Image (cartoon, rainbow, N blue to C red):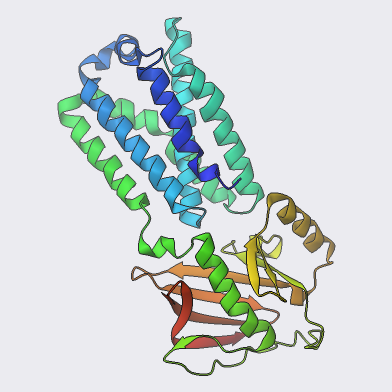
Length: 327
């Protein structure tokens, strides 16, 4: 589901088209449905709010499947699903069609169900993150109604500024860009030859990298018969990384690629069955920095290392010291 992050943008665009283009008429219906807020429901408000919604969808899609990006996706999906409920309740109460009802029920609700199931099943979001996102996104119409009650001239500017701040916060920065698939692959492909074969890490200034403790995996890692594939847990929670992987590293070609959903499910079953040995697993945790560098912790067998990397011509280079840990 590589396109999943962009589903909200496609769904929101079609929903807005149903509300205001074909068949249109949502503004008039909404003013009739919520007559107490009639003075607050202005064309300008709809234009600004829908513009900010589209910007938020673009920001979420651009963030990619980072932990913060997934949390933002879940929050946005919950907000859109709550909007579908708003249209359904309004249709029932007024006994008249609410423009936006069809796309809300056919796009927003299934998208949220599929997305929540996918991210939880792939261990890309914890239950706590999903619950918090559902509560935050699902509460949209509560604070929206409170704002309308205060009338547009006083409430709308505050709402717009608040949502704009959220949109800006979700915009990808040089730090979050470090977690793009290309850079994830580059970091895995840099660390694993060092961890498995003892090769040097590229560093600035150039210097030999210390050895990773227990690189032999308790004597099970034969230098003449290295594992063909090492399955990697990239930025999964400490709990999830013991039961799942989302990348794989081919030792012979030194190439890292993301696992498909089917491959990830198969690896999870093999981990549960105990058929993937220690030398066939690795974990990574990244902490992007504001200057575009990445603080990375990688573990293999019974050793781990932490260092800060800068990207030079698309490749990670160690800057500063590499801290080695045994466990």
